[in-house]
Amino acid sequence: MLIEIPDLDVILSVIIAFLVGLGGLFAYFKLRPMIKTNETTDASQAERLEYYERQLIDMKIRLDSLEIQGVEEKPVDQNLELKQFLEKLAKNEIKEKLIEQVVKSEIVPEKPQIITRMPNLDHNNAIDYVLQLITNKAMTSRDIQITLKRSREHTSRLMKKLFEDGYVQRNTESKPYSYSISKKGKEKIGVLESNPTVV
Image 1 (cartoon, one colour):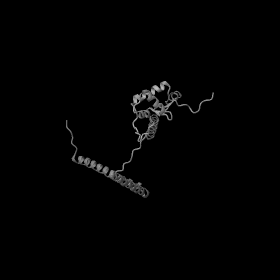
Image 2: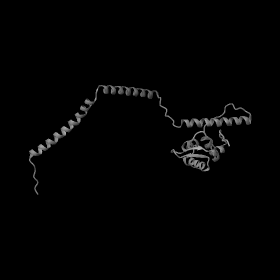
Image 3: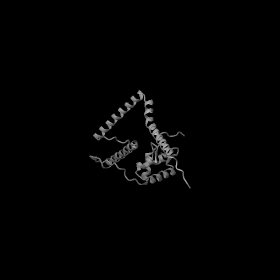
Image 4: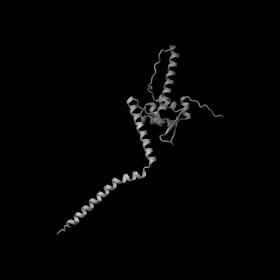
């Protein structure tokens, strides 16, 4: 089987045409961005770009100066309101305990010790504590878990038991579910309704 080799002129013309095509494509892609930017960029856009560039430089300088001074931005705490409520609740409990001690012993302590950690709760105290928490405001099981400092499973079992016993109401329209105290739950912790019904 014989293969015909084309003439040298044909081979050279194909190679030259290929190289000219590559050169044309290279030139096109190099010149196209310059042509587009020259057409679309007008004076107002150039001024706007310069303004934003100055703003960015100014912000970078301010950020660098803050880093040099050692000032760091404090992260926003999403549970700040809940933590403040818990601190108030803990302070009120501590005040009540101190008043009881003073009344019993009739001795005024010079410097009361403030306990910041929550005491260990047995099962009945946890139920009462949770019912007290959700008396004023509906809470999710995650909020209750954070407050109790217990595991997710423990909190889920506790809320399920309270729901089955009728002490809490579950709002299933939102995810995660939110819990609020029921009339039976209010009776359990001794909170009477302010608007009794007239018979």
